[in-house]
Length: 268
Ligand code: DGL
Figure 1: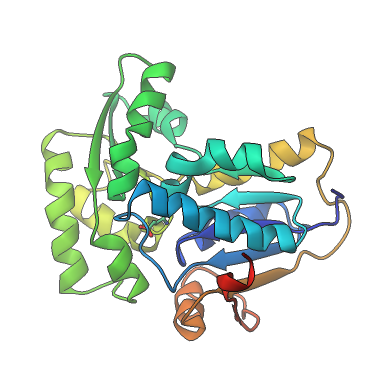
Figure 2: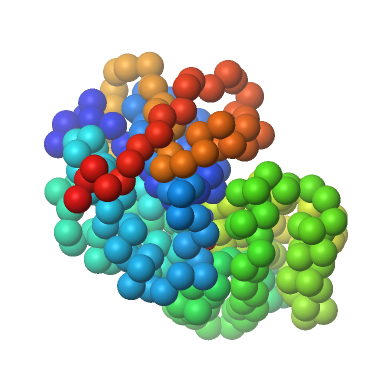
């Protein structure tokens, strides 16, 4: 492994781009290869075995790109496969930060809401982490299975996502959470809508920044932080690159390069 090798960042679709945005900001010299599995999104309603199998396929793609680190920019794969991935590959692997510490820093009531995919909620990860940090914290989990398909389908506004958001968030409003963790990397795409429903008194926690910081700390620890270069980004997807680019343009102000189509079957 050497400092000039790229960092691989991946998700089931376009959600992990919210992590790329933060990585770009705090590590401008790094080369990043992003992969989004738009051909098979969403992952969150699939079985744990299938989610782990897909994760390995993506990690084999990154192994072929000789990355120095892979960032699992997907809460679902982080919850189910991070420990396995860390042991299996010849590069560093880091997952999405739970956001629990950040939530507890801003919460007065210690009532923390978590919205995420079905698989992430079923893993119980956020509740377990919260108990180790502060036994008095109460985590209110809410699965939001309609969000990822709607966001991937470019329905970031409109009646469908509005109705889904009300359906998912109303119970969290009732229990008066004062911090809400966006436990899926797709959800920052709709943070305005979430705040409209919950009110600005509920702090939204997007763990993308902490995740990027975790990645940087690990590179520093292993003396692998890039110290020269201009920091390129490749955007690779398994389907629908035009749609992925339109969605990515919601996050990035600058003109983005051409997006690449990658067939994971080539990385068996
Ligand atoms: N962005 C992924 C996450 O953070 C979404 C997974 C899915 O495709 O359902 O969990």
